[in-house]
Image (cartoon, rainbow, N blue to C red; front, top):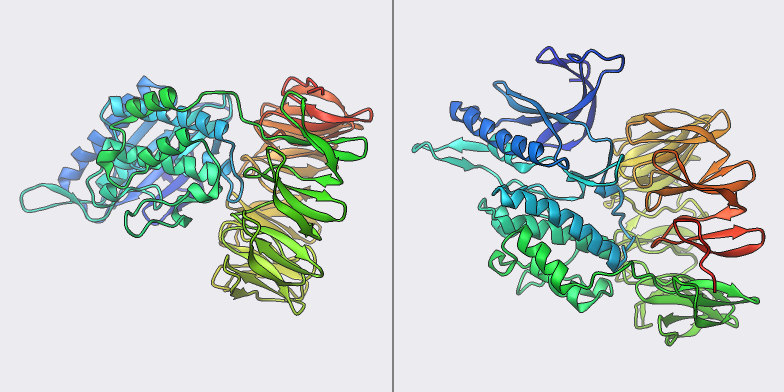
Length: 580
């Protein structure tokens, strides 16, 4: 399809990530006379059987979206639609921004307050659909976009067109679907059976929120064998009010959910506490010791530790003398100091060292996996890399070896890789490739260097230049940069002519290289260095906080750690120091 022009107007310039049910392309609208042709999205829905009645159903489905787009700016405009003997086509406005899937990262947990704000934003849009008796059918992180210009969420890829493409007409001219329309993990049972309700969208919204809170995609969470309800509460600490609200959204029986988006949004506002982001105590150094302060700078845990890590899921690793233990936010030891090394919790387990061996403990401090390993990494996507007899393997949460990694299996720091997006890096003959969770090599070791996958792309080095590959091992962004960083929040840092800038996921330079060093975008801001000072820019390349710091870290929960003329502390997004 690349290079083809549909309807003598839409020139296909790139195929975008999709699946076997549809194809998605980036195209140029050649009918518009401008120096730079405007871009649009072309969605192709292959037909199983073309019947005349489908044309009418297709037009009705497009009409629903067209009216919504006219009614609300957070629905992409419909530019055109057409059909042929093999496919239905929908042409819509291209959104400058990134999908929510780039903000929801496996293994990273959102705060309760941020998750509540996300729920409010999505439910407000879902309520709009339900007021018009429209069911989205395809809600998932990939189909909710954040617009770059104003940070607002946009709903894309409605499932009603796809549903038409799967229909056949029976002998009574009644339309029936051959297969369910929806996304695994975000699709409730009634939708899978082909009888979706307005409440089906609410199930998807709840699944998105649980992904945000736990850092685990819903399709990876277990289900109660008796009730078929998702089991998630043991993975994160949240208020009872929010937990009760989410459990109602994802209830297996749709009759037990809220009726529609309006009712769910009202319940969220009335029953779940609405407050500023809940920031756990922040580690701070005072006179050679470490304690914790709150978001206002008040010292809430006395500085009595030799070292202290940040709180994750309500627990923080701290060092007392030569041993490590874990405290809760009330400064009480939940796990007594007895480990030679310790890490933060990841997927319910924390890596600890006893003597010369590593193992894993649960949140009660019990040894979940005995200390048998010379080296070990944290759990990601249900697996952890460990060293056994100077060779590395991947174990599951019970400690059983699931994969013997291919390639040069001697454990070298930096060579073992966590799984990300279902793939992990390996090294063979001083070259890098990727393998899957079956231990099968899916991308041959053809690269001089390689990083992990982030948002479907992995940074690789060939010769002296860096670029990006997709999960098929194909070059997605040309290998032409002096240096490069992994994607975060939809952007990746790239270095050209000894200066750093940013590209988006299709390789377009969105922030021209002009910085000496850069961090990563987090909460819509990024630390950048000009000369010998750091400041913070937003996605429009505007300095929100001017360069003035000797060192600057990413924003988390509205605060960032910085060094200013020997003073180390936290600033808010106005650049104000949070003083003790």
